[in-house]
Length: 438
Image 1 (cartoon, one colour):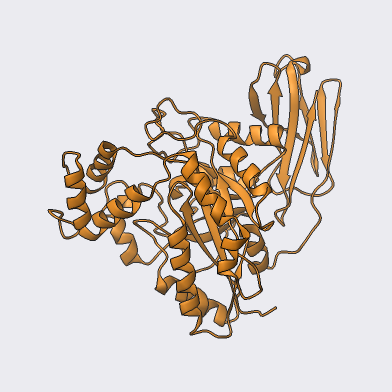
Image 2 (cartoon, one colour):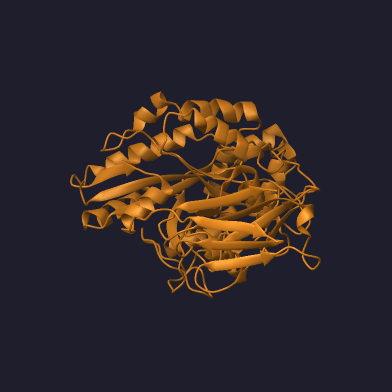
């Protein structure tokens, strides 16, 4: 295998269908760009042509209205038609890499939970999107597709069409993970941040559990200035990566500032948008990846988009752009890669066998041992009660690779518990899950 490789990693923020009414489109335009027009098809056409729009934001408004509103998959039928084609062997083989591999997707799956209102008609509920994709991919053409985790922090008033940058005021992230462990025997080793947003609480949470993070959207300063023309993202309000590296490199974050290089254990990879109004992949960025690989560094170039939007033409344009730039670098090969697969290759991680749990329940006490160190300070521990509630808890640590948890009157009595679960990653990104029904 050539040492000069660009790993192409396509991360899909996988959220299911999204509906947007005409009035909602005008509300968003007003919020982002300050343009207040009555909702009508006539005014929508004017915005598409840039009529009456200030010159400073005219291209952004025209792109936003044309690309975003017109390309939504507004129901599961539309999602299914698109996904059914792009996971087929025929479609994947249109974009064969230099090693004979078809196209690979990385599905970062979200659960829309914890909301009281849902004007965009999201697919609400635990496992709803997850179950669809697991079933769809079970018969897909590529076994190299990877499933990972995507999460939208719940806003204060629990409106599904709005965003937040805070894990800490709800426990929905814990509910999602606990249910994935107990209901599906599944736990993530890679994460894509909802709204591209991380903050100190999110940084510290991820550090405990998840080795691989595809959040960094660092770009050159002139491209960050574009965000200051858009009210919803200016001044680092959401998706703030202004201090992060704009090179195609992976780094360990700092304890106090996730954007800069530090001494935490987690890896953060760079991932730009494929079809968006900001931080979008372009020819310059593709060339940077090839230049890096041509200098002998295996390089991960990741892009992200959403299944709620039409993906096919943008993938086609991206792949053609990659092949165009590649002609300048004949020694560099491209490889369609899974997200974790690519990180293991580019970081030269040492292969190891997955961690094994040795767990038992005796006299109301869960005893846990592992045959090697887990990723973070402890395994992820959760349980489900017989009345259908899911809880995440900390374990008591006994040193080495040994923990325990006591079910009693101060916690919850064991006879009220239906199932318990443990999950962890190791340094190679192997996921290990143990669960037991009582």
